[in-house]
Structures are given as C-alpha cells and as structure tokens.
Image 1 (cartoon, rainbow, N blue to C red):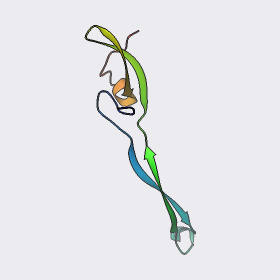
Image 2 (image 1 turned 30 degrees about the horizontal axis):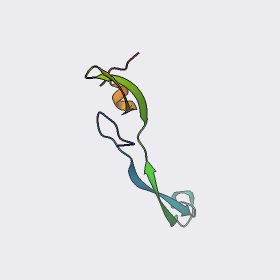
Image 3 (image 1 turned 45 degrees about the vertical axis):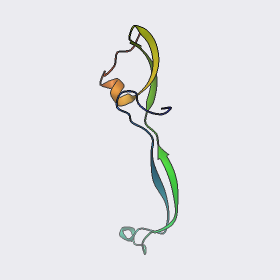
Image 4 (image 1 turned 30 degrees about the vertical axis):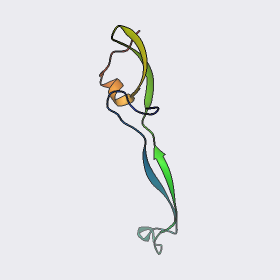
Length: 76
C-alpha cells in the first residue's frame, strides 16, 4: 500500500510510449512507422496528509481528486 489512495484505492497503472519515425500523411509524407515501444507507469497524484481516526492522529496518502472533493478532513 505504498502508492495507493487511502480513500478510493487509486494505484499506478502501466502503459506504453511509442517512438515514431516519418512524416504524417496529412502533412505530405508517406506515413509514420512505430520504431519502438517502451513500457511506462502512470502514477496517481498522491499527497500525504494527517487525519484523526479513532481519536488518534494518522498520516495517510490521498489522491488530489479525493482531497479536492473533501472526502476526508485534514488536521490543522
């Protein structure tokens, strides 16, 4: 649970980046070709905040979307 949102459970997902060569057909070329595919990770925007749970102060990670929606109250 290192990179996971405490509220919604959002985690990193994997994806790909494509390296292309050539000019697009719409720009007058013969078309683009994929010359390489590299795996990559899309990480969620996690923020560390302090909350009070069961009368105790707790430090958690929450994504920016949940934080903006005020799903948990921060300790000031």
